[in-house]
Image (cartoon, rainbow, N blue to C red; front, side):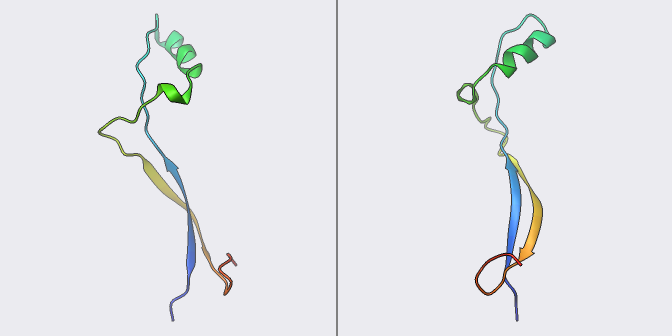
Length: 64
């Protein structure tokens, strides 16, 4: 008989934003001040995900 399991993952989404800066150090300062609304998802990237853990479920649907 098959058992039921719950899979926990983390998901990352790639985002991009073009900025202007005097040099790479200044670009880091500018980038850290940006808000999430400034970024868009690039067409060629869809993101990634990694499996963190898997737990067997008990009869009530809770991880053991």
